[in-house]
Image (cartoon, rainbow, N blue to C red; front, side, top):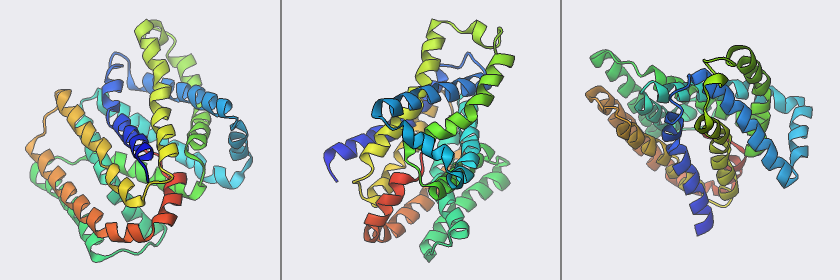
Length: 303
């Protein structure tokens, strides 16, 4: 653990947290057009970086491995779902809901791991999950406001992460493979449905620059993450993951959204659950640092 690695991973989470501000710059275009461009430009950026690093053979190896594709193919679908929901949420004024969803992410991931990986848990971790469930229930029953967007995002991210854990592929190689699998559909959509005034015909120079930058905005945090994460203790990463939803929460407020009473109550329940969950796993994470770091380095990408 050193200053360089800490700063790299910190920069990664800050960039993830600031993404609502970037996608809001493209508010003049519809979310499907932005999503398709994000996929195409992510392919261009990721493949270019792999080519510069001399790692294109790793990408080829992924497509030659049927066992890996069995997990990466469905993972690409849930990544597409995560990206699409996030872009739509930003354009529709639901940035606070995306923040809530990514706060819920660790608890949802842990809940899925109990069923998918049969991981052990203690009573405090169960209490943490119950706090999150209670927050959603109170919001739905007392205020008639069910946080559907937040739950959809947290589930998409959790299932994506679980599939990536099975695949065990280097983050940048993985995202390059996943976006390559999406790219034909994205290109067909753009060519057949977005060549007119509802797409490319309405894009000015500023729009082209922003759309092209979307590939770097997507991949750069992952590059920083994959470089810096290897030597960091697992418990440090556990606390760092709350940086991006915290920044997104501030972005939502800066973009004019309101932290209503029902949202605040739901957030308080989730924050309490996260505090209990983080403290209860701190000692366990320190004890398993070497193994945990290996999992993180080859595992989930927050996108």
